[in-house]
Image 1 (cartoon, rainbow, N blue to C red):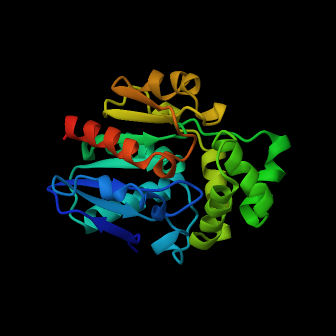
Image 2 (spheres, rainbow, N blue to C red):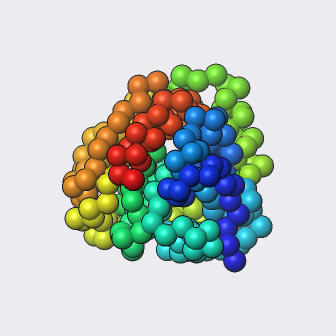
Length: 255
């Protein structure tokens, strides 16, 4: 079994990209025109239960997802590669670097969930599970909160509609457990992989600079941070040109 992916570019340097919880890799489509496809080849990988891998069942753990992405890399003859992950897949990227740091040239982590996970308060669990299953109103409220309560309702509806269309409910629930209950922070201490953490200024507190100072910035000595002022949790769609610019510069520095 190999994950479904979309290849973009013909460059000698390889990049694996994966997506956030609320979309498959189609969330990167606004960014794609601004990628350097002469220097890089990008493999936009859909995790099990999403997008081109929607019909691939799995337990949807960080271990499984990491293994799947390395298998994809082998199938594409990607030796050493850069990794770009968004939110939950940024967490997976950290696990990949802890397993095989020699394979990862750099990590670009967009509004990441740290290796310590993002525990959900008991009072919020039922609300988030209902949003995950089928309650579109709850899901739109969740997106609105994560983007700073500042974007048009049309975007909220669009984001939730894409979530429903591009993913299986069982996978959504399983990945929710993955990023809310998993903690492998002990594996991250001293990781020397170059890391770029990209934060949205309007994101939730759990994804704030203060939280990164307690987690990734403490564990990993080669970590840089860029704060995107006009974005919340979804800079792939809120500020695609600027996001592509930041990642491009970082990857070229560590190519």
